[in-house]
Image (tube, rainbow, N blue to C red; front, top):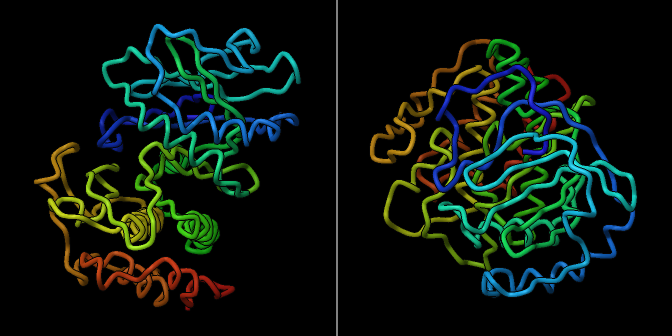
Length: 330
């Protein structure tokens, strides 16, 4: 979403989100900072509470307007929004400017509100920095840092989907799990963990993006809506019953780990968009070749347990022995 497109192409419909097509794929990105944006944090929190409450024809005023930015080029688009590389006229800094058209058939104010809520609440080194938002009569605008790197789909595509070395997967997963553990402690589950929503920077740092499908839950609260991306969702989302968004994140993390180690996603074979065709394996189905460490096999088995009640919680995932070994072969 926040990245300059390269020649890597994604097969249409492979990893799109069920509720909306959140992200574009591949990427060249540049990190930027706007020094004055922290002054807007409290204002943004207050403004996000009333998001979507105005009528379309009302006069809308905000500290920023589109004329405050110079649009350089289009980076990509999702189901209801476009992302541009832009330069702030006041600071001269480059940012990613996401424009969401209120009149779009797929427009959903809840998704915009979630992104703003999480952006203003979550501040973490491995989460894309949300800088500001503003609105006009016809559009919402979200301002993010601009990253240099590629999402994991582009990374795997560019290497011909060759499996990654386990020690490289370990570095990615250690950051991802710690980031999600931080989100969970803040009461937020992401619910759309997938290759495209994990940006790999040039120095090996990851950035988690796209919180439009997230949920902010109180203690013990569960989710009802079926959201996420077909190849990464937990099996309980196929059932018409409440589920733990936090345990669903654990399963999706397990799919990310599995798919990076093996270079494929055969956890489920489905038609995207049809939850009814998902075939979930029992705990012994995913084959583990000899090159996979015993610790990785054990962790994957626990993360990919189809029963959420028996699935390892994120708090225990980070303490698993796989994350604390210096050589991912044991």
